[in-house]
Amino acid sequence: TMDGTPRYETPEEAARLDKKVYEAWKEHENFYEIGNSFIFPKKLDYAISKIFGVAGIDIPKEYCRRYIIERPDMVDLQDKCTDISVFTDQTFFLKETDPNCFSSLRIRRKGENAMYYNGKQRWGIVKNPDDGKEVEMAVYDTLFEITEKEFIHSLQKIDSSISILDKMTYTFYLGDAVRCEVDFYQCNRKRSYLRAYLDVDTEENRAIVEKFFKVVREVTYNKHFSEHEIARTNG
Image: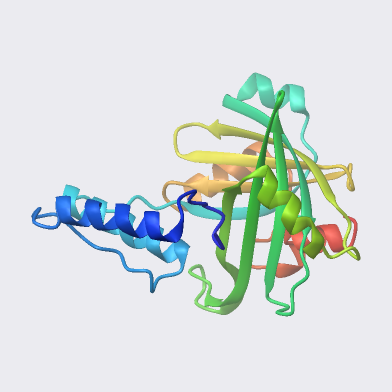
């Protein structure tokens, strides 16, 4: 399917199964039907909002801050951080007509295992919550797992003018409130790219990040430091 989440039944079989599920649950007090008028990410958001609504709790929200940092010492990271995970990525960018929309294919390897993804990122104008000024930001940023067959089929859409982006990524926690992803790119041995996910976007949590890493600049609101641009300019 277009969203990278395939169903293996025929359309007729899928419709029959969906109808049986509908008939079995339609009288339940917490039954909600999510129609096909939604694009897939919006369907997910709507479904999640209903689940949390039934549970009577607020939807948890992460705030993502993006930074260019001095390349950290990997041994030092392993000594000071918790829940470390490491994987390698190869990202191929696809041809796009919209300059604010970037599509990609990704192979992610962890040990002997390989997984395949379709990524989409769209940039738009938003208000910076720090000062209220209008800035560019990735307002849509998704990564869906796809099959190897779908990956191979989509390779024909690759933009050959953009380099393949090779990187190693470390994911870990700084304390309890900050989850980090640090990308080590093959095309730039001096700088790394940091995504810091904050439970609460406070100066205190941001200070944890800036104390641990040598921050060159924050690029949360700068499209010129997106992965697409890093690949296009070769680092």
